[in-house]
Length: 209
Image (cartoon, rainbow, N blue to C red; front, top):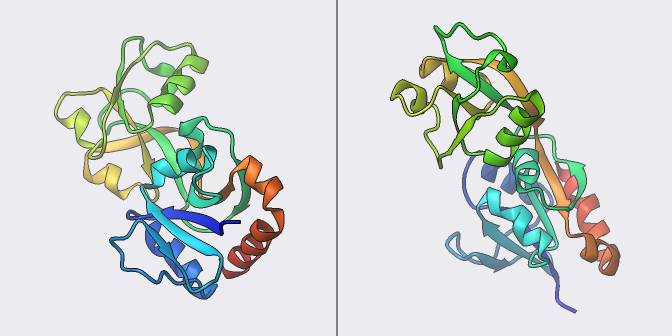
């Protein structure tokens, strides 16, 4: 039987805290940072370093058994995985933000045809569909905040921790779609077929969080 594969973000805001949890759990990669799949100091556990947004996909299809990533990307993926635990870091909110001088104070006030720039097209469409507002979603991969300034979009749906990045780009939040923290997620089949291995690793990571 192969060991348990644990997926972690290879960069971004969750990488550092995730690796600190592993360090406290005495789980260290044995290969250098450029290796995607590494053996670790804990026998039977391998570390898969990939994009945070891709982790739910690798978990869902059973390539990885466990993963640490944000609730926001799990929700955006729409894939069915188990959320085993909250890891206690990476707190942020997915918000709707408009220009600071905008007359709109709530997402429900936005008119039909509003152009919304985001890295979260699925959550954005679902949110505005539930409000009964038809919007044009523009999917970007980074630097979402500049879209209104440059005239590409009327507003954005983006992650915000403190609100300072929004303010620096002349934006203000008018609504929250969801609140997110880092989650320990698991493949549904692996949870049944490798329960003892996964439960041991889950307990170790939660204690170290």
